[in-house]
Image (cartoon, rainbow, N blue to C red):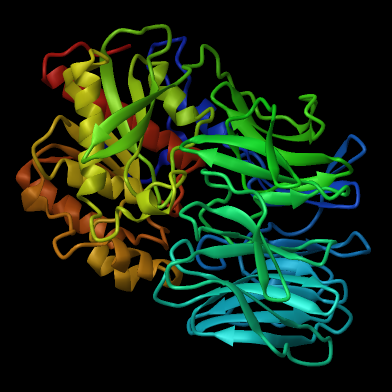
Length: 603
């Protein structure tokens, strides 16, 4: 028997799942399958990554070499740099690992430093010292740390943001952007001389500016500095040397991921001079090899590839997944043979009878909007439909096996993810279309997709729902603040007032809210026209619970609050037992609305 929303304030640990549908994926299965691999890198012929597992209870550094996998001992690893994180560890020549402690944000391992009011991340080994970025309330420092003594020196400081220190010989490169912009809108690659006993001198701006986003610098063995830039409207690969800039692989696609975290690697250099990079068109990721300017697709069984490429010999290591394949780490041959060696498989928690998605194109506001439709398992007919605007909002829908999607499709619901205007994967102009229009064009696009699904017989009128987390939760709330096809909204960890969020969001994201919001962007209870289920973690530091609680009070007074599920000891990202409670509350809410409307209730 499912617990009701009213019963779910705390006490989540005791929740038992049994809804009488034996073939359905349980919420416990979904929560336990939430193993994630990130921050993949290589040193010689060894791979390292960070592994997050609900069963382990902490994020750990894991290593692979010659077919053997080992979890390294030590504190939990994790970076809070710029709120979303940066490379949280570095491997030294000795093989030892320096890491950022996931609780304190301080450096731990073979380096000892007194705790300060900083968050560290974006770590790398320069060849002579540890480099990284540390953040405090007033800005960022690019720092170097001498390993033998722990002595720290500040190489660059700003009241804005810094990222990606990279060294080759006597040259240092890094990324910077101002405190009132976002790095995917405006960021710069810089280089200067690098000396162990002095400050960088003769700094030169390599790329970037007010209307250009440039990042991910890497030094090539050929002496060129490589980086990603969207100067043509697409994030493509370039190289620079002695004031000369050249395109490396022009392609009308996104070859980089929006830099929510510091230290992404969407490309990697092979020993023979070739390069491997990700290529994204909408929600679909591909892997390509670049040789003499030519771009050739590498066959891989993945449609979603994380921005952490690493090289082992003549193969490239990736973190990949697909709609039928859990996230895994694999070594991919670069000779075009399609060879794939899985070195860390995904976690199978009973994902049977998987719903495989279809890609749709829907016209909205003069733009083509992409949607990813997951039909109910084993049923192609009209169904109750859950439309999901993705989080971000400067992000995209992932074309991968998603346990939350399968939880609902295995119970007779259809799910559709929407890449509304403002999403990544479609170029700069599409990405910028949300500026000043948040809560308007994203809502219009979700509504257009929903109406298309009803008109084409894929969804049942009156059984259309909208559900989102964080920025997606905001879109869901705005969607039921006007007339439309949605019978109910579910908002998890939702932003409620973008204008107020410019003062309460983490320092990194305050400009994001200011760029996107319009003067009338707040969600007001008296404008909401459909029932709403709210879910929020008490420990959410990105979107504080106060605005959600106030909205819940207003909706309760109007009779529009389905429930306010307060999740104890849960932050912005809901996982574990909190996710179990959230999924069950959402399912109960959908079934209740369908029952009250006299519509068939799946399952």
